[in-house]
Amino acid sequence: MLTYIPKVHKTDSLQVEVYFSDACYAPLFKSALKANSFYCFDHDFTMGDIQNISIDIPIPSTKKIRIWTSHSDIHEYLSFLYICTYFKGEDISVVFVDDYTPDLFSLSAATYNEVSELLKYEKILSAIDRNEYIQEWERLCLENGELRIFKNKKVISVSHDYFNEKIESAYLNNSKQLYPTIAALMASDAENHFADFIYKFLILRFITNQKITDIQALLQKDDFFKNKHFKILPIQNWNKNTKFLLEMENQKYLLILGEKNLSKYKKRLELLGDYYRNLAQVIYINENDSYLLLVYYDNGEGIPLSKCQLDSEEQQWVFQALKNILNEIHSHKSSFINFSTRFHNKNWYDFIFSYMKAYADYALEQDDLTTEDYDFIFTLLEKNKTYFTNVPLNYLHGDINPDNVCVDFKKKIVYLIDFDDFLVGDSLYEYAKIMQHKNIPVFQMFKNVDNNVIYSLYLLREYLLGYCFKKSNGLDYQDAYNNFQQILKDLKGEV
Image (tube, rainbow, N blue to C red; front, side, top):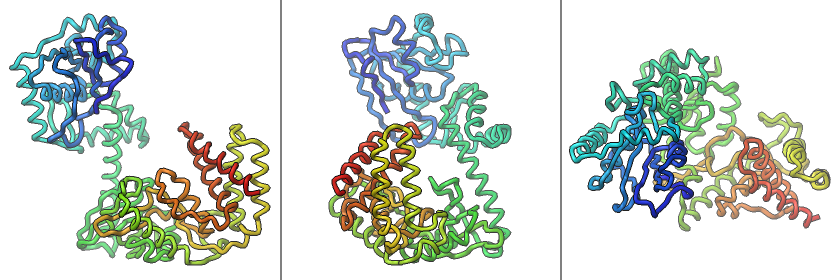
């Protein structure tokens, strides 16, 4: 991706200084070159597919191009090769900063006083030089390896497993903690100077593969899996990597590991039946040591709704299908008191009250909720206690959001995932959870205004939750804050 720095970019300068990380900006801009134009080309070719890649670099042909790079930083060097290939007919000069001193692996490590010294190493690329660099880039594209590294000052393509031994040693020496391991690997990286996210990917991949090896050994000891050929793959974004995809006998299964109480999880899946689609049918559970659970998994083409761009026709069938699924789930009645749930409240009113109070207390402490509004919320909650105490309760998914609604466009199927918050409650509460996701306006079709005060209280709870989460994590909480303030105004209009 090409990154511009508007305050620095100058179109009236003939000379363009090209560099490969924002950290390189300071020494250049503080130097005698500050009157020149600047371009930061920040695209990492260290890992992943580079065949047929095309990234536009809108530097006019009338400009003189000077590239600041290094033989020591793999990210900068690969970007340099790409630019040489991109500007095949342009005059290019290059400054390899490590020619000045081997300790200077990047311009970002230089001071502005050193820039004038570095300029002494500037070299105008000849046609022969340019051709060598182009051939090197084309070789790497042809190899298209999983990872590109320096070895003996030459770029080679290697697999993701290349650093496994080094990663394992650093991981064990740092008490199996991720970030200290990243720091240790970066500190010992004298040749490549990988970015931290590269090491994070490699470490997490190593950990996952080690888990898969352990799981394979575990399953081979189990009578159900003996003499069966199976393949285990990680599923991205599952909490704590406890869930894997298992392929066996031309069928896909969801393999769930390490649950503290698998029998309760099994009960949830059985209660949902077809509404959990193919994930609902429990195939096998090892109940002796509560370690593994196997369920069908067929909807491999499903895309989370958060990543879908739906046209008007798709919106109709997607959201109608979702509404039908929720209606079926909500059609099952139960008692909150008798339902096996991770929540320990005595009844539905206590559940709503305790959660609302926790979020409201936080907002009050932050001076983002007045004492008058705080009292108003709980007066209104108490005023409607009869509703919360006596409302007919249904099964609820518990965490309806765009990431948990998946769409299989090939089969025209909509299905839900992530039932970890499955509980019994008021369906209005579920619709309020949906309504907080304003980024998907079609969710408005679920709005139920039969009891606007109750619905607004539920919605207020959700916006308070969003506010607390964003505020406590240092994120932008203004939208959530504005939303719960607006709901407060709406509620006061109802009283």
